[in-house]
Image 1 (cartoon, rainbow, N blue to C red):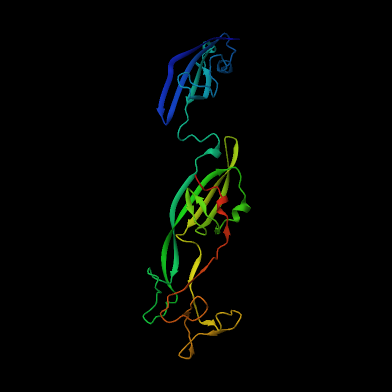
Image 2: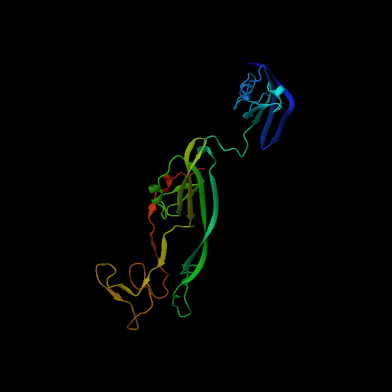
Amino acid sequence: MAVVSVNLVSDGQSAKTSDGRTYRSVWRVITDSATDTPYTARNAAGIPGVGDAHTDDASAKATNVVADYESPGKEGSRKHYKVTATYSTPTSRTPEEDPLDDPVQVSWGHTAYTEVVWADQDGDLIQNSAGVRFNPGLERTRHYSTCTIVRNEETFSATTARDYIDRVNSDTFELDGYTIGPRAAMCMDYSASTQTRNDTDYYQVRYEFVLKDATWDVVVLDEGLSEWVDPADHSADRKKIAEGGKPVTQPKQLDGSGSYAAVGAAPVWLTFQINATAVFSSLNVGSL
């Protein structure tokens, strides 16, 4: 029980170029015993193994090698076998061998937010013809930039992710090559799904950020119905703002120090940092 001959035959040979190159090579293998099996032909000297290079294209590797009887069912053909090898080169659609080396997916877009507007584009207060602000205030729709990043990572911590959701950046950080100033980005999503490829377990992690032109700080007009009795002493009592000897019933502008502002004074805006913060520079979202 031995292999008598192994010959490359022209019938069945092929070559194709598309997104990568593929080849097919065919051998006729003859043994000296009818009790031999395709296993004998498949492992004959001269037959390539999976991963072996094509003789004319070293970049093309054997991906499949199949042996079968040349004429199944015919007793006289039990010693004759056809062995077919398929070769291919990597294509643009072939995943990287190490999934952690896969390209990072980045997408930019916009999302709509509705906000109350207290001043016009020139910074003047929006008021009726009697000089009273509208209540409720006027609303407008603004679109803020969004950045979504999906990448494969070796580890993931749900606890750490929870510490970023709904928080804004306390520091300057890089996002897809752009420099983002403090408190300008809010993390809307930090999630992951488990994946396995090429015997490698990993996480496909998704980050999503919403960016404001300035910051996520809330800016409101300094106004109220009361003022400090003594602006220099905030431990003292407050008093009702009065006009014409009567307490006002609509909020009046304050001067930034807790005192009733003079009529016609420029509005004073107060800034509040109401969102919790986190250090975004430690996230894996910088130069992608």
